[in-house]
Image (cartoon, rainbow, N blue to C red; front, side, top):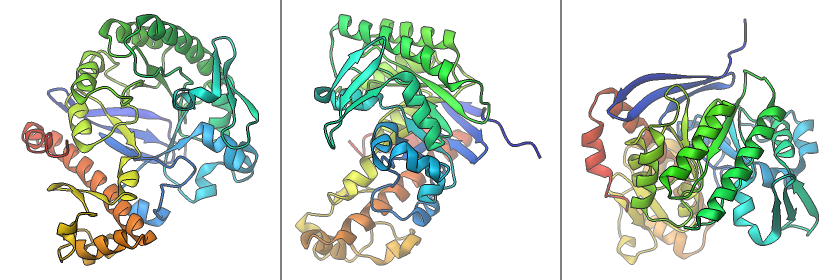
Length: 371
C-alpha cells in the first residue's frame, strides 16, 4: 500500500472561514487546528497519553532548542522526535527564526550565512543557516518544516522590515533547495512585513514564486494590539493560495484565534494554554478564570462538568485554589491539561460552526469573552 503524501483539502467555507483537512503519513489534521507547543519534546506538564485524549492532532517542536538539547545525534539515534517522546502523530517544527528575535542579544545576522548564536546554555558559538535549520528539522523527522526567516522585533521602520524581507526571501530559497523533493513532508514559507500591507504583499508574492506547501504569517504576536494583528491578517490572508494551509504563528488567545479564523486562517500554535496553567489561569466556556483569587476558596464546582479526562470534572475550583496557594506541582498539571483540552474543544466547535454555517453566531458570542 502506497504511503500517503502530504496534501491539503479545502472542504468548505463560510464567508472567509475555512474548513479543511491536512493529510500526512502520520495522520490527518482537521482545520482550523490548534497545535500545543512542545518546545523541548514535551508539552509542559502533560503526559503524552493525555495529550492524545485532548483531541490534539499535531504538536510543535522547536529546532533551535532541540538542536542544543537533546541534540540531533540523540534524535537521529531514536529515529526522530516522535519515537523519542512517544508521540506518533504529526509534528511541525519552528525553524529557529523566532529565537533569532527573542535571543537577539546572543546572535548576529548575516544574509549570506545565517544567524550566529552564542548558546544561552554554555556560551558556545552556533551557526544556524537556512540549510542547517532544514537538516536539523530532518533529524527531528518533522512532518511540517518551516523555512528559516528573520523575524524583526516590533517596529515601524520600513528599512528594517525591507531588509528582513530580503534576508527571509534569500533564506527561503535556500531552505527550499535543502528540503528537496519529499512529498511525504511539507515545507512552509513565512510572510514578513510588519504591519505594512504593501510589505506583506511583497513578501508573500516572493514566497509564492518559490512555491511552498503552505504559507505562514510571521512577525505578529510581538507586541502589536489585537486590532492591529487582525487588520494585518485581514489584509494578507485572503491573498494566500486558496489550496494550501494558512498558518498564523504564535497565536494566541481564543479570541485571537476566532478573529483570525474569521479571516481565513487554518493553523495556530501558542504556549498560552500551558503557560497560563502554570500561573493558575484557566480558560473555560465562561471566560478566563484566575484560580489564585480568594473568591474560589470555597467554590466546589469544577472547571468543566463535562470533562472526564483524568477525572478533571472531579476537582473543584476550591481544591485547585488550594494547590496553587501551597505551590503544589499538581496545580499546573491539572490546569494545563484542562486548558489544552478546552482549546481543542474550542477548535472542534469552531469547525462544527463553519460546517453548519453558524460561525457568525459563534464568533459574536465568544470574540470578546477572552480579552
